Image (cartoon, rainbow, N blue to C red; front, side, top):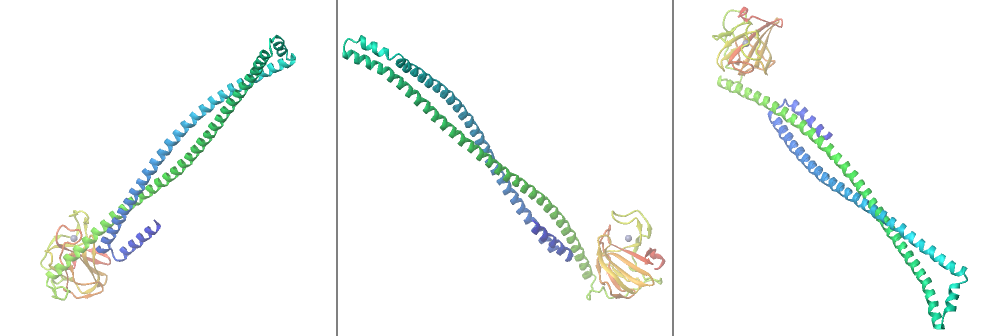
Length: 378
Ligand SMILES: [Zn+2]
């Protein structure tokens, strides 16, 4: 981004150096517009990525919720299994205790029961049957104990499995949490990127606006210059220095700049004729059609022959002894700064450049740097 800004400022400097010619500005504008398109595209892409990340985040959050539900379910199962385990342990313990009691009783009583059965037996087969019965009782005890033991072990295994599954779910949840943090960080980055792009786009739009305005102003200047050139060609100048005639008019210190033209606005205070025009009139306006020759009021050196947004094309001649004459709103100028002109030389043509209501010559006489009434000198 810094690099782009640097290029931009270099471009702006170039525009300033070249006097803001129209073609350079046109290039700048198309460059800036291309840049704008590129930025808009970049923003669109970033927004698409943002939407993708948001969807991803939603999916992760949904997964997390599902995992949390699974964790709760697993917890319930573990609780249930633990209850079962307690019951199984109690049952196993009870069985063991009663079996121990029975064995203890049999031996403490010298296995009287066995002796009684022996005494009461009518035959050896009967005895064996009865002995078998006793064996079966203890065998039944043993079987029950083993069964209960197995059940307890099964439940313990089940609980271990559930705990393992619970740990796996916890790991999954932690993994999802980490993913959520990652995606959230990416989203934050995207948001910042979009914010920056939005700023850049509005900055660039501002720049385009400025360049378009500059180009418009340059085009306006170019049109005026063209009009001035056309007027110069219309005045029949072949040398580019006016009509070549010397026209001196009157007997005053200064010759009339546009002989025969009527005064449309006199020197002094007045109501401004158009927005931007002065209300204190520092000169005299001579009404004449565009292209009417303007003659130097006296011999001297051209100080300025240039364009100004208010004065239009204007010429200033220095006559020495602190006196200057100004000729404004010209359609064409046949002299340039530094050139020596003689009294009555055709220096320019009447026009309507700058702030005007119509074609005329605004003529000023300055003495000691102060505008004075030209009537006093013509
Ligand atoms: Zn005027």
